[in-house]
Length: 426
Ligand code: AMP
Ligand code: GLY
Image 1 (cartoon, rainbow, N blue to C red):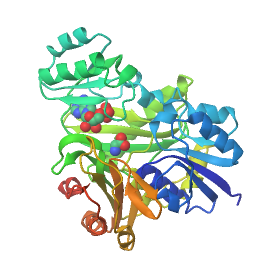
Image 2 (image 1 turned 45 degrees about the vertical axis):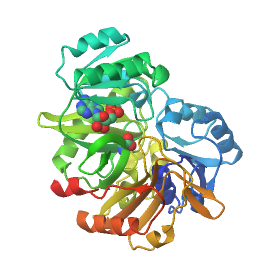
Image 3 (image 1 turned 120 degrees about the horizontal axis):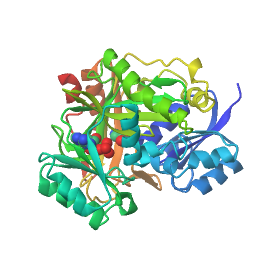
Image 4 (image 1 turned 30 degrees about the vertical axis):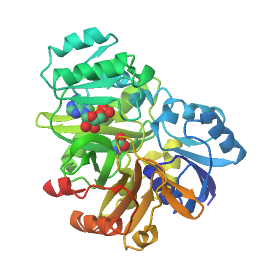
């Protein structure tokens, strides 16, 4: 078997999980992570290049004979890293710049959903703040205001009253909180229901759903308080039944992949639909062009396939040859954050107990915002660690993950104690 060198781009828990799974593959000879974190440094070599510096990454891949590049976050994808690598005959997994508009522009994504009949919240687009505010009168008190472009996951503001919506419009359009990303906004009807993540891999022709998953977005227990990138996740998600999975494939995944192929901008890579399961059916909140974080951590803990083989098959348009297989176990990830996240937080706290946590059977400590200072692992972001446990059912997975979490300490560590409660309820 020909061995290759792999480059993983990004520095979060998702990228640590990708590197962890890739390094188990007999196809992978060496692994580099740019820029990585203290956890990825134990798996491969961290390279000090930012995820958004697409040109420097391309030269690194050329100089180091990288056989496969795997992109974690959306920003390099929307900047066209896949196009740049392919122009230089480098193999890379992910959608092209034009295909990544599915996440990069909410308006593009809404218009495509409209055209292909994918169920989604009703909306209007605006480039003028006053016109946007006038439209609010036509809606009920609740609405969702979204910046068209990328805003580091903060561009969707759920509003409970007309005044909150007016403030959100001012924040995005007048104070320009997200810069050019807010030149156009979308105002959406508020959807009531339970969210689930539906993540698939596609080569533009074949679409293979990954194991089902669900994350807990809110910062506080009981799913209350502001939304974060994700405070925990688990797989499988009991709310997504096999019938629902089939329906989502038919009505939400296939129409998009087919339309993009027909439009001459084929979609290859990860296609992630954020779903709202409402009493009126399943609706799409948004598409992402990347894996979810922290959903990736539990999903990859359950994956039985060789991830390198899978990603190579996708880049070479051979996904029809692959059958995905998953452990029957449940995996659950508890995210530990710095106090203050998703607002401001301090960095540089020393993390203790990592090796005790790693000693817990069936638990894996995935790093996110961590750095190495000499021999010490320190906090270096908002979401710090994603402790992931496997169990024969959700209760056992919860027990494994929290037993490992309890080994870890730093000044100001925070985590939710109810990750998985939503799964038990279902
Ligand atoms: P988005 O970036 O579009 O996925 O939005 C981020 C989060 O905002 C989602 O995960 C939901 O929690 C919430 N959200 C977005 N759109 C809606 C909607 N139309 N109704 C209710 N909540 C929404
Ligand atoms: N966990 C939500 C996301 O990755 O967008």
